[in-house]
Length: 247
Image 1 (cartoon, rainbow, N blue to C red):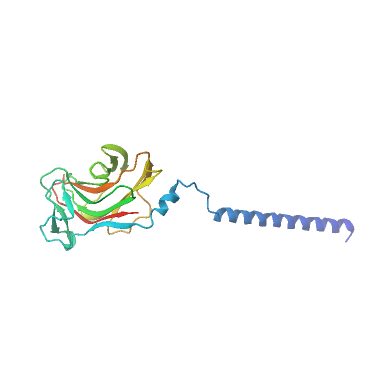
Image 2 (cartoon, rainbow, N blue to C red):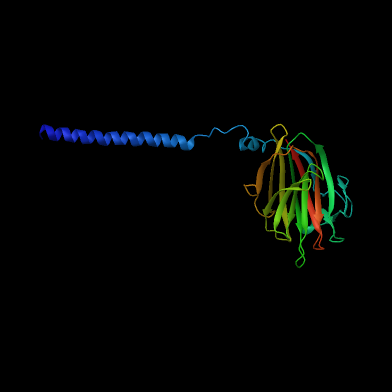
């Protein structure tokens, strides 16, 4: 092999080696970027992920120790003939009769004003023909953050003191228990609030994602929690497993 051939051989070998080293370095950088944790600002969702931890139960009522036909002492009935009855599945629950028609609410829980709050509960309702019921829940009293399910309109409405913040499409099916988780999280020294909720059939596994999770430029409002039943279908509405948590 002459000198020119040897030179060309080593030149080709060095080029292949150089390409290999470059590819190796690029793959290492790519791996670091993929596995690198992003540097997020302090005021984004990391803050709210931390608030998912360390919740304390402030109020809990499953009506198991209350007599049939009694009105629970743990609830302040605003309007409506709410009583404990043997509900769906032979378990005690809070029943609102299907008549008369109207909006009937109740207040419960401590008046918490400087804590993040979560209200969870389940409900059972039925439609009759084209008539459908409606239910609502509130954090911060009767004029607080309100979440209302409107099956007839096929939506969920989030509002504050009659001011609509958001409407979301939602398809409801009756004759089954539904579970609700509704949270109000304080942010920016009480000058803004994150509102988020989940709504799913109780027999199914809780979804990972929230139906809605958004920050609103409204001052944080705490206080008691409230529920409403609207028996527009002339069928009874049942509530159960009322829980308020804070952190």
